[in-house]
Image 1 (tube, rainbow, N blue to C red):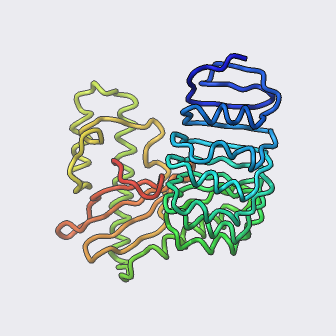
Image 2 (cartoon, rainbow, N blue to C red):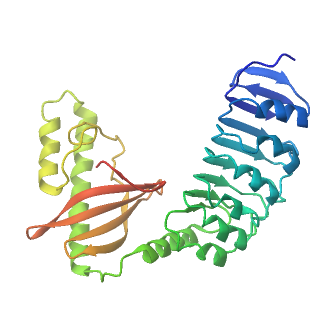
Image 3 (cartoon, rainbow, N blue to C red):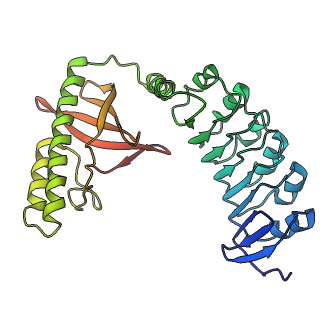
Amino acid sequence: MEWPKQSRTADWENGVLILDGEKKFGIPELTTEIMERLAGYTLVGFHVKGYPVTDELLAPFAGHKSMVNFGVEDGALTDACFAVFSAMPKLRILLLTGNAGIDGSGLSALQSCKLDLLTLDHTGLDDAGLLQTASIPKLSHIWIDHTAVTYDGLLAIADNNYIEPVAHVQFTKEQMEHFSQLQREKAKKTVQLDEQAASECRSVLSAFFAEMTEWEQYMVQAGFDDAEAMPRLLAIWKKYVSEKPRMGYRPLGLSYSAQGTYNGEEFLDAEQITRNKLYIYTREKNTGFDRRFLMKRVGEGWMIDAVQERLDGWQRTGL
């Protein structure tokens, strides 16, 4: 075969190697020579599924400077592989589903990495290994279904309020909700919650959600060109929101959801920040999407001062 001079992505499955999503080559086996050839490209993505890739076969990729997304699924890797990944300075996504030889004992090698996402489902990951993942500073999501992780092992990483374990089978929905609650409790400042203030804030938010849902239903019928679209939204903002309007977000930027942005919002928790500020935590009941609203005391009442969504940790977004 004639190898191309450059390639940015490489994917192998069922004896077919695909470069840059379109150039296909019949490669029944991934030999050391082929791996060295691929490692010579300035790849940002490499993915192999269903081939017994060993730790030794990964060696040519050690120190790869451009790799962002790397995956070996259903392979023959062990914890020795993490030494190779630790030397990839731009690595953000690591997909290792189905490597039964991994138990997590080598994850300490990744503690200086900027990894965002790690899949270790269908591996031998155990409680000790999961505890090591909590020390990877930027890690926000880890898949742990079909592993040896116990519920006690999961609770042991609740001190890390940044990480979000993904488990649809390993634990029940109630167990995962309890874990999230424990994370929030451990992250709270040691300021006693003003229950009356929290109740007032929930009432304000409930009214805001209802009026926003009504406005969005109106927009479905009226459309963006309607003369009342902006005035109606600004009236809601004046009533409930203290946050200074930001470009690209409502109310300066008109947008709506036909289903209702806050139509399924359920209250989860509250956290006192200061006497005049607190967080109200919510979850969208259909999608499991988490938000927290920063409430600010204004005069004798409360207004919404900001909203954050839990994506890679808590990130500020728009209402």
